[in-house]
Length: 235
Image 1 (tube, rainbow, N blue to C red):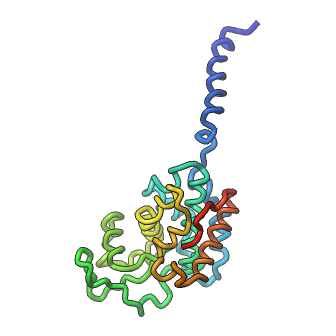
Image 2 (cartoon, rainbow, N blue to C red):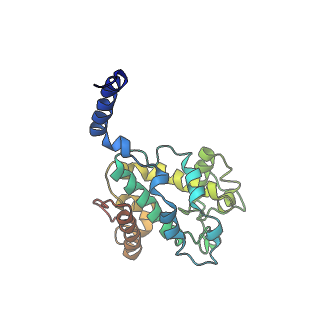
């Protein structure tokens, strides 16, 4: 004969079983930290030469700390969508930084990244807005609002992005959430994210080799994460 306590426990056990059937994804859902494992992150940065400036700058812990400021990153859509978003952003991080080798854009100081027509975020004399960080944030019209939203002086101190690794990752996530996140979560595909990041220079046949490189990283990372890359891979 079942004891009274066992009899009372039965409905609870049945309810748990029902929830497991109805909500399997909620029960097995993985966080960004679960997906971006130390092995995944290290497999990328370990391909950078030992002498790279980024080796002691970028890290998984700093990335995850930055992610805390963007709760919608890697949390919207099903697990396949989340994995594609993580594969996509790391594909661009990899391409932009050479496997997390570079903090600052190669020959960046020699470039002119001041849009003098932008009066909302005017360039500060003597400051340079070349690419910095994992997504190589560039131009005054990006440094200005990124600084406003994140909480640093993007126009007067753009170099901060190249000295503070958590801030650097935050700028990459800031750009991503404002320009690329919805492209992945809505199912538009990886190709539109290339256009959002560097379309003028790479898309519509302008630099097919670079596009292929980005797509190659993306499909590789999707394979590692156990998800299909989806459609619309190029731009």
